[in-house]
Image (cartoon, rainbow, N blue to C red; front, side, top):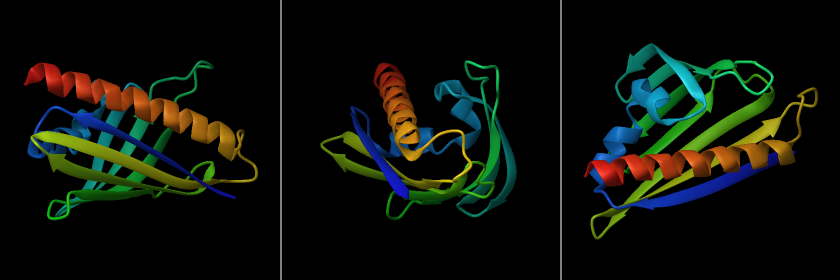
Length: 148
């Protein structure tokens, strides 16, 4: 069964600043609390293939996977999906950026389906993704608003 999460945050910073900051994939371990490392595997225009490795979880397990991410500067959207799906049948992400009055709203949508043999179900993953997205969005907001 498919599941989806959607989270958003409004940041007191211009769209260009938020866009540049959040699309600097190599810097993600600095502000996404779950990522320990990013390895860029391929770049082709606005598309990047990269390996993400997480920090160890409560059981000491670190996870790693390859994703493909395509940024569209004209529409201020990003589409991504896992190339190595791990416990998912699929995992797709879309990021949307809009600006109003010098403030930027960033919205993240994640669509996925958990494999039948995964160690968790969709409800547990929805909770985990929502919690992580909200925490990371708040951190991005704090960094960008205090650096302006």
